[in-house]
Length: 231
Image (cartoon, rainbow, N blue to C red; front, side, top):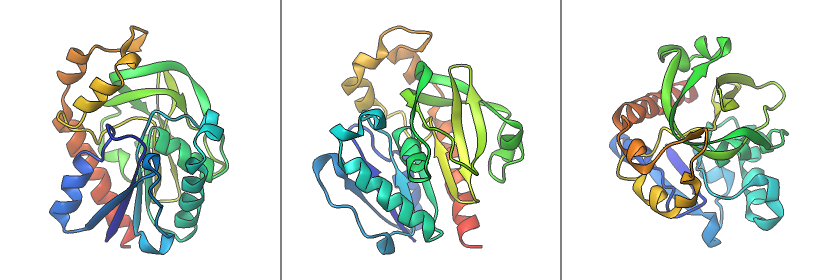
């Protein structure tokens, strides 16, 4: 299994996904598009993971490489391979499927609960989760919901927290992949996002959160998608 990730900032890494992939013995590599690294051909990817980042698709003209990512996502989807994305990554997946990024009603930065929709409660993966559970948020925007997609989760600050297309394409506006260690560079380099707001926590509040449970749920999602993809 060749798992390929796309990174948009040096301080937003794959986190627990890297250790999970290595423990499984999967081939694991990535592209730092913000550093002008070249994306792979879709034929070289079995599972695409699209990370978050400070860029905004509402200003895609400032980041021309994001269109190249959308094109790659579209090809991987057409080839029937799994794709998951977090935050900006979810917006890129939605964009590849014809939905426009939107401004979220609220900025969310911190660990807050999301609520599963009725569709989420019966989703092949999320039906194993509580109806409400904590995740890490770090965003101003949110994905549009592509035609034919299923809205899986929402929160008081953001109505588009997760969606699924088919059985192996998932977009998450939130994060479950950072570990308590890997989130620290984000806290350091995106400190301006921590200005007080309705759904913003302090560094101390974020670091006191239960990252282990979030990471275990992330690994369950990854395991489930691999099982689905393998038929």
